[in-house]
Image (cartoon, rainbow, N blue to C red; front, side, top):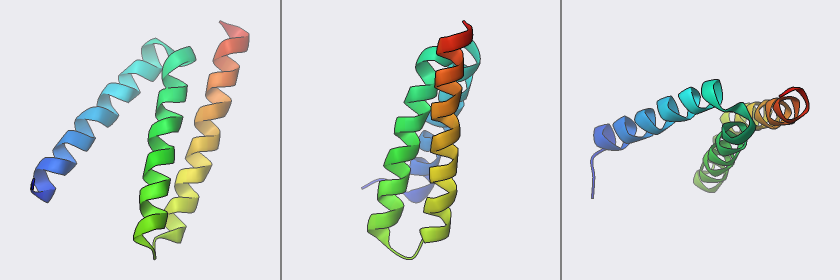
Length: 75
């Protein structure tokens, strides 16, 4: 079992890499970020009691999908 600090470090690195990916290749990485947010939402729902954060994540997921669509149209 890994500690919470190690898990958060790994998650932070993944999210930084995804952010850089969106900056460099938004056509692809916008959907990667949307999938990542989907996994976070599922985890929050299964944990229970975090509906407000899950709803915020859903809004971010919709934004990532919109960015992916815009990148497809304007690139």
